Image 1 (cartoon, rainbow, N blue to C red):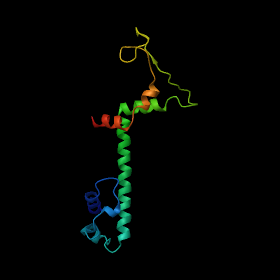
Image 2 (cartoon, rainbow, N blue to C red):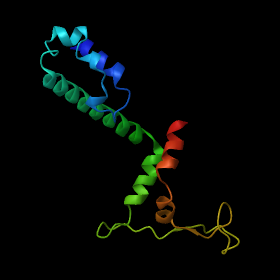
Image 3 (cartoon, rainbow, N blue to C red):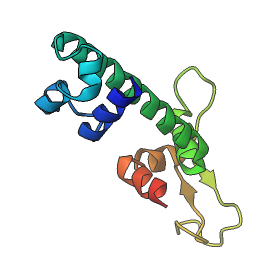
Image 4 (cartoon, helix red, strand yellow):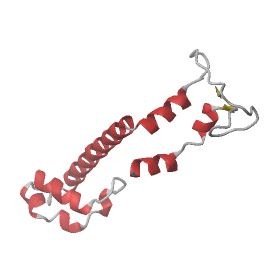
Length: 133
């Protein structure tokens, strides 16, 4: 079965592949013939779909672990969850009491930062950029 999975891997580069993308030579390959799958194409299809499903599940689990390990993603995901009705937490903003100029915003300028609004600006592109590092 390992040889068949290796064959699937070599002809299925992405998780978005379909069984129909496999070349016909897979069904006549040595592993497929040895398992009698050359005579039962529906069994070959079922084995490929099971393999692809397990591969997708492993990839999703690995991705979830990666996201859990990343503090940037964890922080902003937590901020997005804060302040939902009924959970007792509300984010109104962050006061900088040391600010000399109350109207200035940004680094060293004082003012308020609405974390919920900032969190809405964090999307897939920003997360991809962080994970590339």
